[in-house]
Length: 106
Image (cartoon, rainbow, N blue to C red; front, side, top):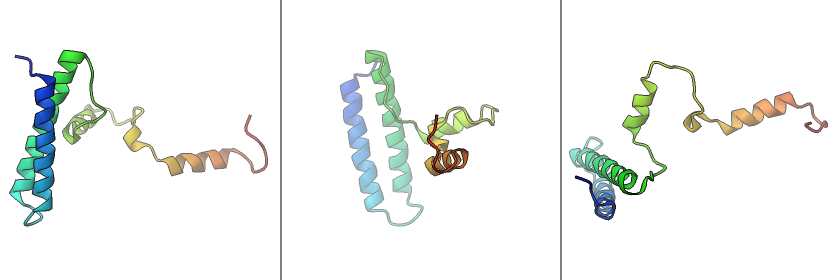
């Protein structure tokens, strides 16, 4: 059975609000209400993403942390064009080191 994307979006928005409320009213660092709201939010996101993909062939630009962890566990330790590992300042330093001062890049 395919979930209606609009219904999935409504559920996702409600889960976002519930997560916010759980975080804003947290009673301790390990408040189970925050963990529960996190899980509900993650589930609602996955349902919405699947509904979008099924009905419209579209996806969101977001990834769940567990999805990223699964990709890291593929046994390949090399970085594969991963924007999350991009360090802009390091890249600028590499460019500055490669070009002598006063000479334009060719």
